[in-house]
Amino acid sequence: MRRLAALAALALSLCACAGSTTAGAPRCLTGAAPRVGRPAPDEMLALMRRERERAARAPSPLVRARILESLPGLFPDASDIGGELRCREELAAENAAALRADPLVFSRLLVARLRTMHAPRLLLPLAMRGEERATAYQLSPDEPGPAPPRSLVRHLALASIPASWLVNDQAAGRRLALDRLREGADARELLLLHGAAAALLREAPSGDPARAQGDAGPSLLRAWLPDLARRLDGPADRVALELVLRRLADVGTYAARFGVGPEARALVERVLAARGELPLTQGLAGAARDLAEVARGALHDLDVPQRSPAGADLPPPRRDRFRVWADWLDAEPAGGKVPPADALARVRDLDGELAALRFSAPRCRVIEELGQWLPPDEASRRFDALVAPVLDGDRVRLSTETLCRMRVALRLDGVDEARRVRLLLRLLSATPAQIGPRDTRGDEPRPALGAPLDEEPVGEVAARALARNLGWIDRHAGLRAWLEAQALAPVPPGARARERWSILQPAFERVLALHASGGPEARPEAARAIVRAWMASIRAAEAQQGAAHASAGEIAGARLRALGEHGRRAGLAEEVGAFLGERKDQRAAVIASYLLTL
Image (cartoon, rainbow, N blue to C red):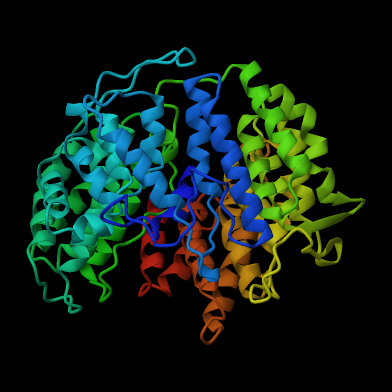
């Protein structure tokens, strides 16, 4: 949620001076409660001020920090009524004042300030030398440790600076990015800077694969080649592997353009000769196959340079992927855990808000917060009450609030998995006739903003929840049976339906993998049926002239890859190989053909 709030804040926060103001705009964080003259934003603003007051009197630094991190999500957008609010500017100015302290007290509160700070010019000095000004981390009573290194100050600052700003800031940002990318060894920091690296690489190509302009991108790529070779021979490490995969994909995209094709080819062919089994991947389940797949894509791109300067996307991971935000920057820095009594007190405050709020937007924010604060026992006890407004007999109620309740209920880790899977299956299998018309009574009247006629929000919420919990498929036969039936069915028509199917594709592949695995639950005939159904769906997609939606091509590409990944284990290697051979001019089919040989 912090990342969503950060993205929402970004467009209004790229000012060079955090203290800039808009003449005549009402104050947001101090003084009288702000109002913009519309009931829903005004209700959200009042909620924000009450939450800010709760943070000030919080029982512990950890509770205070977590509430403060949620505040940007309560800043409403009132730009369409002419009365621009200054909430983000005021928060930036407030944070900037705290960040000027010398020494800088490194604590959970400072982490919260850095997570909600999006003024690049003020963050840049910390991104350059943040740990030099910071004290050692001061553990609060609710943080058992270990304490994070002082370098986290620098990394949090760097993570909050948009890559485009960093690369285009000719004064210091670009120099910082280039120096760190050329000389840095810390894989975590280099992952943070990979967006800047991608922007620098895109600068050079002129559009003709045989020509390149500019030196920043080419010099980076030349420096990466020996570094990649060293990392491949280095110790197994999840973080270094993520960096290598990203850089190897970029080598395939840009090396021929930048005149280092032979050197890049030698590196890629070394990975392919080892089938990804190199020291870097030893002991990391799925890592070797991931590395080999990216290398095969890079070799294709060296052989057939694309006119587009955009880098290749990484394929879905088999490995336990290191996630920069979830595993690191958004995690509690010192293992902090809110005591149950403090969590329950916070829940009581949120309950009081929910009882009084009228509009969907602030109510959804409170429901989301409840999902973050409910202790496991309390979450289990409240689950039925949370989802009760969603269900009406065999029907599903549709509104902004019920969609929020679905999302939160499916995320509650304290609730028994079987209960959440029953809800998930109920939502996934609901037919259009079982989903009621959208109830807009809690929404702010905005005539220009209607719901799309082809929307499928219930199924999409459920599909996204399943994508985060693919392990449920292995443990719940009813869910598996529903997915198997859908995997065999034709891809439904309509842009939104195709988008939902694209989200569900990893779940379909999980079912295929299970049936092709030879395990106790496997049914080889089901695996073969799915593989053949997907070949038919790819032919159908190819027959469409100008596919109605990009998701049709995305689904076909994902299914081509799945044929290569699972065709041999399904007992259809020859049939799948012939099918892929007919499509040897397609990048996805070339990579799938390689996977079929592993």
